[in-house]
Length: 393
Ligand code: FAD
Ligand code: DHB
Image 1 (cartoon, helix red, strand yellow):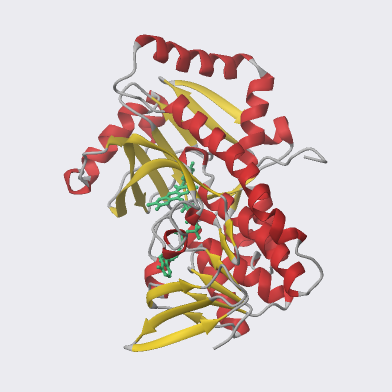
Image 2 (tube, rainbow, N blue to C red):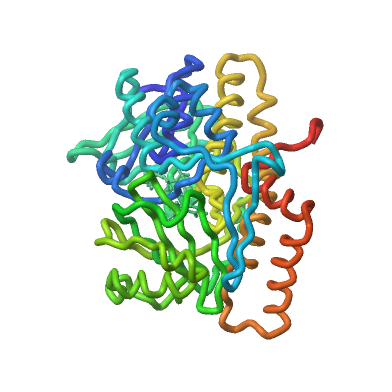
């Protein structure tokens, strides 16, 4: 089989890139290791920046998002029970949309299926070949048979544990990493959210987040130690811990019910450089990871493929290679800006058990600064809703 772009991975990055290329008239095949149901069963991010929402609309996959997603003009921080609302709309005239990653993925999958574009699910032993030359290839096995796809470019959209980054020759890649000594235990429950907007809470017992998927479905997280096992957390234990980390009024309002999903996610900051190796490009979690505190992982993935999609369209149309030449530097600039913000939000809101009294006072001073300074709140709002560089940057 031959195609112009072989896309490895059918997560948000791969499927969004597939849609961009399809709209641009560039032929692409998506190759995914798992089944479609498995991909849709993963509960992950919930917050979309305005730029991501705008792109999904432009790609013709925004209809259900506009109907079922909810626009949020602000979010709340709670620091040892003291509350501060960050009014995005008033501060930076932007908002975010709460709409689950699962739903974004479903919309993209359905649009791809309707268009007749090819997605190979259940591809085993995916391998990348010859991307340092003119004629890259991707091989895989499916149902016991071997397959080969010849292509012009390979887009590595296969997440942190994928094969794309691992295929880059040793020594060609630099990595920058920070692993945090805790994770997030998340629960999904069919009960109305505790508040209309998200609440990010710092407490001496640890961070907590109250989020949602709809008016009737809530998503809650609490910071837990790396050694914790999900089996040790009954629903009652989870809700008790969550209540203790919230201000009393919010804790009182919490509606609880049987969890429909419960899992622990580790927290990590990670950047690979560069993001292009001949005709292979890395995007999304294959290229970088942020701790989830700023709700950026999914948005970064969408940003990357918007840049790559435009560059590949330009190049496949034989107009210019300027876009693909600039891809790595352009995406890395956005990546590091977002890494900084996610690291800072994580530092502000989590409890580090080895931290000294000085560091705790600095965390408190950071929160007090936000309370006292519109400029500080504006900076948070600008980053949270999605930074748009000044012209010429
Ligand atoms: P992925 O979504 O990981 O998609 C990669 C795809 O490639 C997968 O479908 C995978 O099956 C496939 N694949 C992997 N290896 C191969 C292979 N060898 N061959 C073919 N296909 C392959 N972000 C937030 O903003 N907020 C959150 O709350 C949040 N929670 C998260 C919880 C967890 C447990 C994880 C892992 C991530 C979370 N994230 C969160 C991050 C966010 O979900 C990711 O940033 C986003 O999914 C990145 O999209 P992606 O398409 O780059 O990668
Ligand atoms: C959700 C996850 C996040 O990491 C975040 O910052 C906000 C919301 C969520 O899953 O709803």
